[in-house]
Image (cartoon, rainbow, N blue to C red; front, side, top):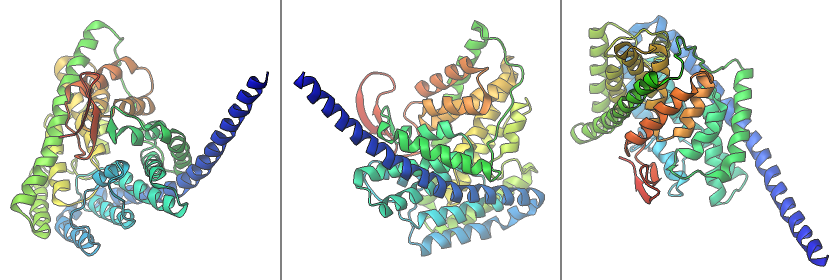
Length: 422
């Protein structure tokens, strides 16, 4: 009897301790969700406004060199001569460095400038940097220790991703999954979930909603369409590797042959303007969400995915700021739509599956990819998303958008490898 009483007391003490942890993280997560969500909502609103303004004034692309010079100048005077972008956030999660607070206003302003003048970039990569920086500053204010600081950074990342992209479930998981492939930081689950949901609610209340797409002509799940989607997953793995290689190679080429950042961004701006004039389209300016929507309807220009890779590589490698995630959506959606047209399967379905498969290939985040597909497209085509994402994850190898992402466990065996991505 005494032993049972002792066990009960020990259990109650443990329960009370865990309850204190829950209350602590719940309070902090809600604060983070509100603060980061508010800043991220403002960021999303500004992006929406400048994108609308640029759409009506496409001549602004001619001022891209001036915008580039301004961005380089801002980073130079802020002593960010070698900006690592999202990689800096990932190294913080590996406890190797700290995120300077000045990263938040810098990425906010420079991404707005990039989108206003037609640079080919996304927004979620900027959101991860914005959320990680703001989250860490809140952690310092609350005096969290070094280990909890990592959770705080993930908490901020989830809040920013959720507010800007409108997928709170996927945002909760992404920050825990992206840093180390094969290992999930489950200690951050409650903080990430609560901050993500809070930020999402705040953004929606302010009129910033998610991009939700409607699929048409979803075939019944059978062997033939399933085999075609397997082929799509294989092709998307190749496309995702091509995207990563292009981004990294362009960055390496510029740093080797155009070491002066001002010259580098001027040259790249001139190339982007020339290509835009030759192609006579504004499809490759900004994130390119309208093109994604057209792909979901089954309409696509055959070289669109290759041109988006080129434009995004030229933009980000030169020093313009933004994200790589929405461009990966663009690339996957346009390639998938083309694949569907060529292989006789719903282009709309293939655009959606391609979008998620390429995203998975460049981020190595299969769980997040599936959750995004559920939130954006519903559950009618779940088997096809499962196939496309899983095949792309396996076949894309160890390429990644982020050099500082770690592969903890092999994709091919139950083997601990602890290596960095290519």
